[in-house]
Image 1 (cartoon, helix red, strand yellow):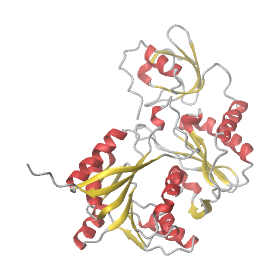
Image 2 (spheres, helix red, strand yellow; image 1 turned 90 degrees about the vertical axis):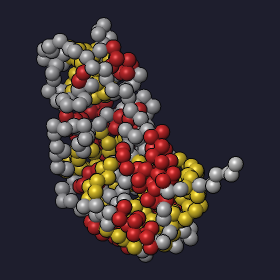
Image 3 (tube, rainbow, N blue to C red; image 1 turned 90 degrees about the horizontal axis):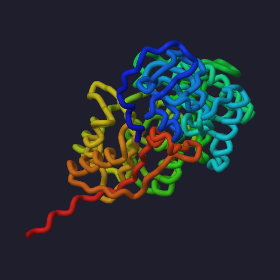
Image 4 (cartoon, rainbow, N blue to C red; image 1 turned 30 degrees about the vertical axis):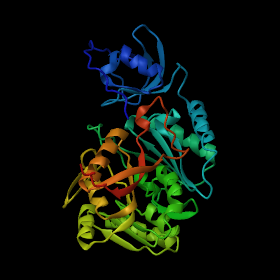
Length: 413
């Protein structure tokens, strides 16, 4: 889901200013809570320096709040809906409100998200907790000043004694800039591995890697839901990453676990996660998932549960994977090695792919494989990954558990 794109507009020349006047379309979305202003929506003011604080105004002078200016595909991110200051006290209050939303977290878990960007009214800023360490991740270099204030507030809120890291992630739409290297804001600057606990299981993460620390906490509630459904099953985990679903499946009684990922480095980390929990790692296969699926099909090898959680894009010698285009092909390949009555567990984090488009691709794949899919469960991230309804882009996650059965033959006549 996403907000409809801004309408093209021709704007008069703009003089430098700490105030941006936006058009009626942007005004309407800002009044509904949407926190971004696109460049084509700015009528007057600027261009400000990225990171500069600006006031937002409607064409008639209506106050629309305070924002941090940027350049590129976003012109400004709004933090306040009034003209108050963006100071340490403000960010301490916002981080405190985010913490209050997370009082119902799962037990035996010390890996979670404290701040979820726009959905916690801190656009472009995420704070992840890895045991005693914190990682503040920014969507743009323009937010570095904000990141420091949020980090200070998060440390004060949690009393986190470990290292606090500042990371950046470059949005694919931000074509002009590259993400800066992760740096230390507080504590020991030496990169190191940290063992965290999720639902009683232990995983090794590397906070210094920022968004690729090694455990996707937005899947925690889905792993919890699946826990009683692994017992005795043959599990194939594709795009296995560092093996969190594989470890959970084995811990909850899976008879067989096969983990496939193109990266040998990820699979080495997966093996350590199995070892941390005293579990048999089963098969770890470093190979393109399509090649593995085709080989298993030719061998007649079958599974009861297939987990498939691919990235939005990847490339290998076997070809290119694009989530927008290739889900039907992937679903068909999975279903050809899934026993009738088994479950296809499909996840997509592409916000640009609507649930309707996702379902359509899965249905097309099922038809190619001569199978039918029935949705048994639709998962969502946990309370530490809220999705604000005034920010449609927040509802990116799709986690569908589907029973697969052969298509019924058409009735004669």
